[in-house]
Every structure is written in C-alpha cells, then in structure tokens.
Length: 101
Image (cartoon, rainbow, N blue to C red; front, side, top):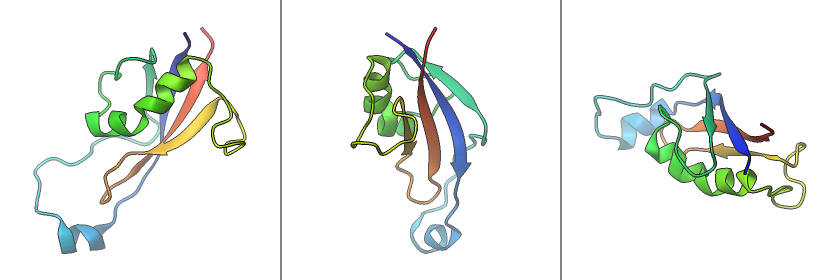
C-alpha cells in the first residue's frame, strides 16, 4: 500500500454567503495553504479536519491501493486527484498524490 501526500492548494472564502446564511461560529478552518499531510491510506492524518477527510478519504484509499486515472483522464498526473472539502462557505482544495516509499 502506498502513502498519499495531501497538499493544501487553495483556500476560498465566500463572505457574501457567510453573511446571508451562516450563523456566527467561534472557530472556522485554520488550515494554511501549502500545508502537507501524509496518509497511510486508511487513517486521517493528525491536524486534518474530519470534514475534509470525509470528502477525500475514498480517493486517498483508492490511490493508496494503486488506483489511477480517475474519471478517464481528469488529472494530468493519473496518480492524483484534486478534491475540495465540503464547506460551502470556505472550501479548501487539496491535491492528493500517491507517493512511493
């Protein structure tokens, strides 16, 4: 089984949607662009939020078991995927890459 590198590529913030629909919350996403996490394919890396993991875990598991070429050529690197967390107010894009140990 391969490890999977998870890199935070981009954070977005939709203040117009937050102002219109979100109840005030004390703690929002504090992940930083450029942060890197390594998963063994089965477990959420420490420091990666559970919601983001829920959005990507199936792709991480597939990549760790050798899956390639999701959606018939979606990614230039067939051993990768670009996945966003499911926070509609402040989505974060993650690059997932199978890595050889």
